[in-house]
Length: 178
Image 1 (cartoon, rainbow, N blue to C red):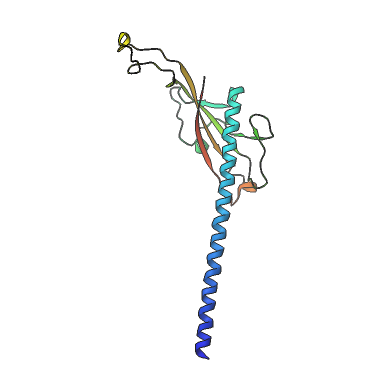
Image 2: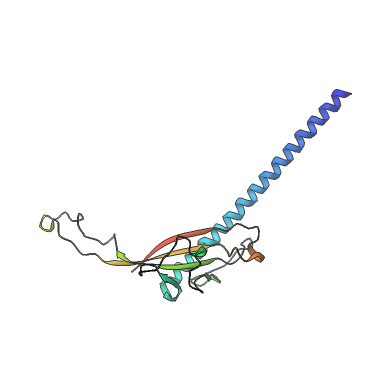
């Protein structure tokens, strides 16, 4: 009888451990799903900002090549970011818009910063890029392109009504125009 009771207690403890492990795995899977949805929202914001950059240069927050302008890596946490520089992505199907899924939390946001004009490495024929013996050591021509840094996030972490206890993903891309 005592042995049967001990076996029953051991089996119960093993059962509780299995249930707890299953609950932890469900939470992990749920968090991974939430992160993937947030990643897709931030990706949509990157694409929308890139589309808007083609047609509307008014979305550029600041020129990071100007003297005295400091552009930290994450503009969302920069207290010196000019007001109105953080843009929400509009819902819709036109260029610069996106259609959120039911699982998405909050509105994706983006900031566009001009990184300045630089020589385009695809067109540069400068030193060391010519095999012509008549032009050895001669500086060739190159075209310039304007580079923009787009930082996007899946939602506003300060908007507790839509992003509370949800994953927030921040992505960044450099886009070349011209």
